[in-house]
Amino acid sequence: MKFWFYKREDIYRLPPVTQEEIENAEKTLKCTLPNTYKELIKVQNGGRIRFNAFIREGMNEAIEFTYLLGIGKNYGILDSAELIKEWRMPKKLVIINQGDGHEMIALDYRKKLMTHLLFIFKMKLVK
Image (cartoon, rainbow, N blue to C red; front, side, top):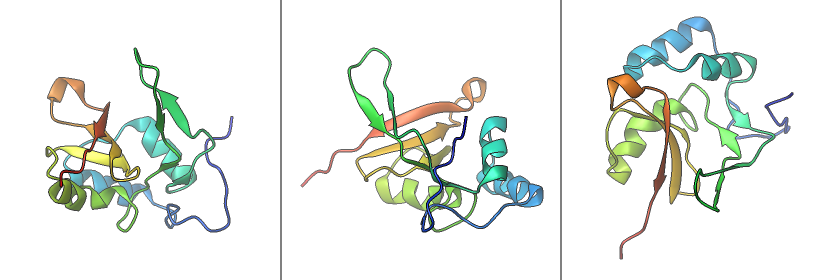
């Protein structure tokens, strides 16, 4: 089964990543990224994906998930700290999909026993 959706122009597809760059990203983010994520990123460093949504357990709601952020800045997971600060979110998250600004998908590293938990934020703008 193919994971990546190849599109000639894809702002989320970053230059290929090396094992050294993956290790440096983990040091910068102070976490160990899931092996599945690392394997996907070695094939293609971020970009559009074939499956565009998943259903939240216990709810009749689909969460849009059209791309996976790769390792790097400018549409990569190394932008996480800036986004966390800008949106006043909890620290120790690695954003893997920025959504539309109201929903983001992140790896949650706040609890040591539950690393790699997928965490979904529902953002609401306050006027």
